[in-house]
Image (cartoon, rainbow, N blue to C red; front, side):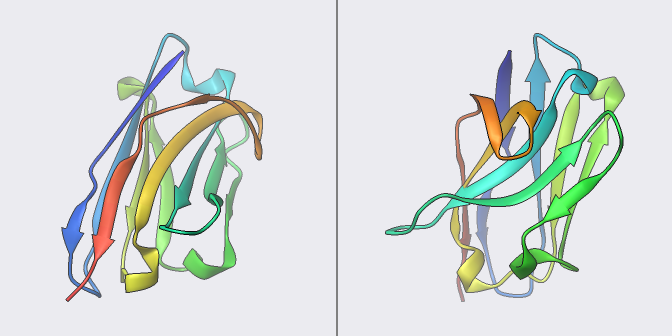
Length: 117
């Protein structure tokens, strides 16, 4: 299983970005797909997780109402729509796959998100 993350960039506070995580080697239904992030000097934290078999999703409190995780089965891709970005959202964002949220077996490379004026 390979995961390829993309879509990061440098944006101003209040802007939006959409991250993509393309999964190859297996179908989306085989795993939960998650986004995690790691800011400089901080531990990696979970941002959102999508159980693709049930459609249930989870968000960390700091992004609820601003971020939305979604999927496109035809493209075998999971997205993270990030709206109203804040400087504290600045981090390297990673997508991951596993059997359960918070238990990941596969990781993609990171994509940098920088929110700054």
